[in-house]
Length: 116
Image (tube, rainbow, N blue to C red; front, side, top):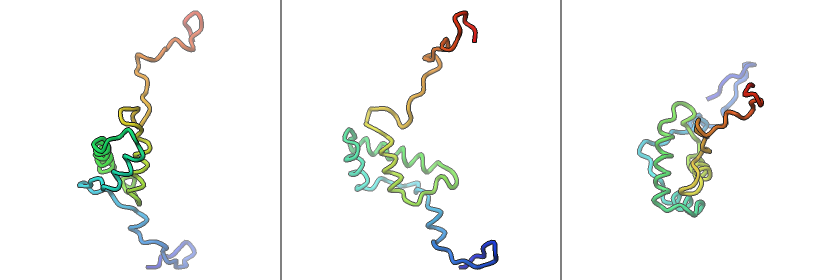
């Protein structure tokens, strides 16, 4: 179906709307076997059980994301990026751990007399 542009000229869409909008991950999604094999190969410290746990986190996260951010045009690529960012089993989490409030040295930056 043609749509008018600002000048009133009709343009044919280049892609179907469903392709450009992407799709949501199904609530009952399970990790395909070939995605599991890829993940374990990419992260040698991962066992298949660990990869399945990561897949459950992946599913729970993406099912809960609202709106357009929760739609992806390539779920397999989204999985691969998730695995790459996840890191080694038993290693650092997806995001670097922030220092706890008690770990910060608040004296840094103070003058010798304790003032700012």
